[in-house]
Length: 340
Ligand SMILES: [Zn+2]
Image (cartoon, rainbow, N blue to C red):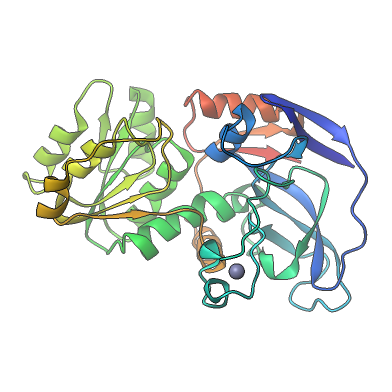
C-alpha cells in the first residue's frame, strides 16, 4: 500500500509498504480518504531540533476515512462507516482521559504524523475509541478539517476563552486554516469579528466569510485600528497563533479583564511581556493545544449544520510537498486538503 514518508528534512517520498494486519481487539482499520495540512506538518517537514522522533516517518496529522474492518469485540462503529481520527494516541484510562480532557492525557505517547507514523497511507489500524463518525451530509474533504483545525478552534474559543454571543474578538491571521475557522465560528454566535490579513485579496475573502472589520497588518497598525473600532475599550477576546510578531499587540487590543488564547507561534518562540500591563489590566492568557474528542464531535456537528471549513486548495497525494510549501509561504486562504 502507499505511504507518504518523510525520509529526511524537506524530503517526502511516496513509498510502497506492507498493509497492516487485521485489526486486533478494540481496533478498527481505516482507509484514508483525505488529509488536512496544518502548520505542525510544516514544522515536521522542515525538521525541529527538539522534537524526539526517528525518520523515516509516515506524515499526516489530520485525517478522514472509511472503516474497512473492525476488531472482534468492536461494536461502536461498523464497516463502511465514515470517520475522522484523533491525532494522538491517548491512554484512555488516566484521570484526564476519563474526564474527557483527552488533550491533557497524562500518558500520551505522541502526535501521529509528527512523532510517530501518521495517517498519510492507504490503511491504518486505530483504537476504536479514537474515531468519530462523520455526519451523512459532510464530505471527507470537509470532515478532514475537524480533528485538528476545527477541533482546536472549538476548544480555544469555547472551552478556553469562553467566548459568548455578542462579544468582540480579534482573530489574528484570518486567512489561515484556523483563523478562517475562528472567524466563522465566532460570527455564527453573533460576535463582532475583527481580523488581520497580509494583503488586500485576503481582506476581501475575510469579509466574504463574515469578518466585520479586516485590517491589513502590512499597511495599518492593527492595535490602533482595533482601539478605534472599539471606542478605545478593546476587544473581549484575542485569538492568537502568530506569536512574537503580534502577541504584545494582541494584548494591547484587549479590554480590561480580556482573554487571550493562543495555540501557536508561527513567527518565533519567545516574547518579552510587560507584567505591569498583565496584572493591572487583569488579562487572562490561556495556552491551548489540540482538543478533546468532544470538540471533534462538536466540530462535525457544526459542519453538518452548514458551518463549513474554508478550503484553499485540494491537492493530489503526489503534491503533498507542494501543499506544504504553499502553507509555509502563507499564500493560503483556508485549508489545504490532500485527497487520497
Ligand atoms: Zn490518558
